[in-house]
Length: 276
Image (cartoon, rainbow, N blue to C red; front, top):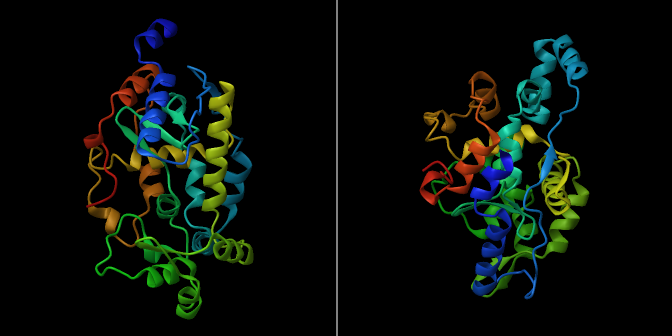
């Protein structure tokens, strides 16, 4: 039955080919002559690690210790109670495009970003530049760089360079900054492992996802918050997206085939890129 259903769907490989062809015509970083070698269907395992021991440790802590953990590491503990929808997760993987490191859902290309993951996790120290909050005043490039890096205005101004009509900063400067502050946030490591694992599974046509499946699914649903009728709590300072997910029941009886059909027909107007 699955093979009959998949035969009715437009080939995922052809979607990737169309996306790559379009991008090449418009000009991008993929080498001309690149040939996609992806399996039509990826058999992926989303089996999660046993969390009982971690849950037991968390339950032994008092409120003061828990609050200290939240302050230092954001909302990571909520992952202990977030259930992975295996049907949705397996369907999503079929639409991962390793060439561009993004999901190609019908008319929509979506990819989790550092800003989004940081906002969802509510990581400390970087909350002043949330992904879903529009700045009241337009900041200069130097001011934005100061906010993101936490460095002084002199440091930022000395490294800004002009490139065409815009401004940039050399990668070497950012690399040195990252190496000097390895404990800043876990988000880059989580995101990098997610991209690596998705790409490896799609190219092999099988495998086990090694990454944070809970956060990836929360990110996916966050783009449909208007559909889920989540009110303007997203703007409140104490609002926690992960706490909202844990507290809100969500259907898990939608089949993998049905999810693939939904994702196949996703339109641009279905997706909320950010809170207006």
